[in-house]
Image (cartoon, rainbow, N blue to C red; front, top):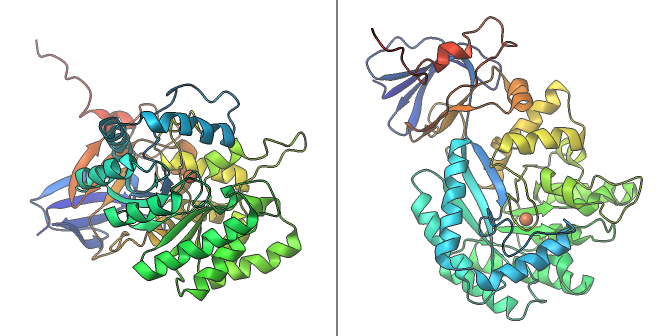
Amino acid sequence: MFDLIIRNANLLDGRQGIDLGLKGAKITAIEKSIAATGGKEIDATGRLVSPPFCDPHFHMDATLSLGMPRMNVSGTLLEGIALWGELRPLLTKEALIERALRYCDLAVSQGLLYIRSHVDTSDPRLVTAEALLEVKEKVAPYIDLQLVAFPQDGYYRAPDGVRSLERALDMGVGIVGGIPHFERTMEDGTCSVEALCRIAADRGLPVDMHCDETDDPMSRHIETLAAQTVRFGLEGRVAGSHLTSMHSMDNYYVSKLIPLIAEAEINVIPNPLINIMLQGRHDTYPKRRGMTRVRELMAAGVNVSFGHDCVMDPWYSMGSGDMLEVAHMAIHVAQMAGIEDKRKIFDAITVNSAKTMGLEGYGLEIGCNANLIVLQAADVTEALRLKPNRLFVIKAGKVIARTAPRIGELFLGGRPTSIDMAKDYLPQTPQR
Ligand code: FE2
């Protein structure tokens, strides 16, 4: 009756000791106790079962390139862009694919099965697009990879930027990117937003723009993006990534801006690790945190999801492919540590991201895709605090990754210890 039953699971809504029945690639039962036996079973032992994590903002062409061809000495965003410009002519398709696949393996082990990656289109060779389109095919059995045509050096500012972006879309990159704050002038930025939204409308594609990733409170391209979204009828299909200038904007202006973002149904994607690392670099003290206004946007009904953005690349020397690390930082930077706050933060790396990415069949409901993870934590609060191991990662009803439990959960009273769960992994005592 079922191919796989996961018993004794805790769910995100607080229900405990629940069984989930999977048949083929779908979830077909969620009950207090499934009577059927016979198929494979996993005892979740009172651990949290969640849909997989989704990362709506990443750079897979740059990941794991740390130190190539040199380190970012200042650690700033602008030196990172310059450094990437030095590395770009040296990139080969084979090396890009190798690094991307290594990252995808890491992602799967962390229960991260949906990734939206920007693909730099600034180099007219478009070796980045070629490589990541191939990676998308290769990883399709275990990761849904979406690709954004991203004019890193500026849509108008880079030589051939306009043509290269269109060519990347022709090759099959499916989302229109942009970087209006990096164009030569505010006016060029404004024009780029209009031009890129027009392309998306003409081609029937979504938009995902790096937007206002700066401390400059006058960087207001998100206002233009919201207006053009409505003008071209793109509501719900547009994402504004970063929006860090909102942190520095005048409160009165923001009181007008947030309703515009909500009206245009813009999906907002802060990148907490990168924002706290790169923003405020020109400040002495007080020093701005730089992440956009997460609490206020959520309160206005805006869909907010968090991205990892970078892992070991010219902009960020750290990162682990773990969306719980991203969420952990978000709690701190946004100062959202209440119980309800934490639930909203967890949503921002799961259901909200799925909405941003337009995923179908995502979630833990009957009829949803049988994609889920078992975490070594009892609930959302514990998962966010401990960033625990992903004990099982399940895709289309099959276990595709396992990680041994950490030993020594002394703080988890009343439940089977990790040692009990770890017995499958420990070497057997030799028989004498
Ligand atoms: Fe980015």
